[in-house]
Length: 370
Image (cartoon, rainbow, N blue to C red; front, top):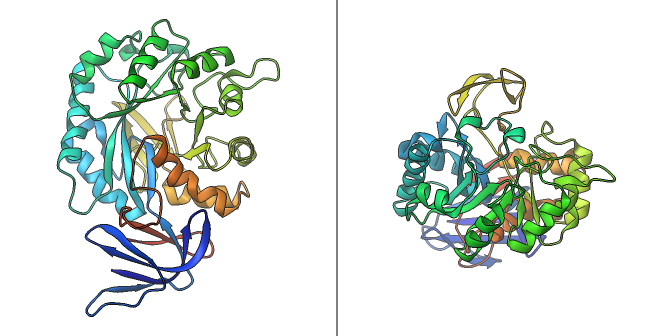
């Protein structure tokens, strides 16, 4: 497959370039001519972007990664059509056996990927080491104190866990952070009552991300910076942002971008099963979720994930938050990929994954090449 005449995002800038994909990988980038019999896609007038990398996504298109292997496969097959090249399937609060079953299903799709699907990079465990006060849409009855033993009882030797979100102020959390860093698992803070000093201490132990910045965490105050203030100020920390215009005001998105830059913000969907579907009633962890005007909420009004797609997040950052496209694109591609060590994703270069997302001059999604 040869993608010609597009404005490709290469090395941090947009360049007129053709891109060749063979056997699932990018093989050439430059001024290229089609080979005999080669399929060609004319991308004239379009931006050609690396496939998106979503490191925090629970569900999509009616499928939820907590429900088993078939749903993870459905997510993989559906997400690639939205331009997502790879994702980290994100679990939520559940009892030990349910968590293990979900992780086992994620592992199964990693071991035997979909023939045409977004790559499953692993699991992001968003629970159960969370603060009850800031549980949000998580199930309070399933939260437990952090310990390496509790973690091992859930994971049982599976190698799929790539990330974990926890509350670093809870006794035992720093030990878990240090041990997971030793094992190559990225740790993040959210659903937490932590103050700034807890976040900096957690970063000393190995914590490297803030999950859904400003949401389900202590607020920013000029004398008590809380989780957001510490995350924005600490250069060791990447902040995850839900750019749906609901979870974060455009000014907050702009502040985050100005504080952290392209390498310090990872755009996430944090989507639940209604993503890609119309408004209505849906489910999250056995709880009824009501989606109205794209906002997903529990009956009590608490936000319950999002219905955001990654290409919509990019458009919102550019059009609502007024951030330059050259700064935004890495936030949905190379920054999240690099943050979890996903080599071969997030860039247009020889050897990288052969998934390209196309967007038009208005930053509307125009299709995927894979």
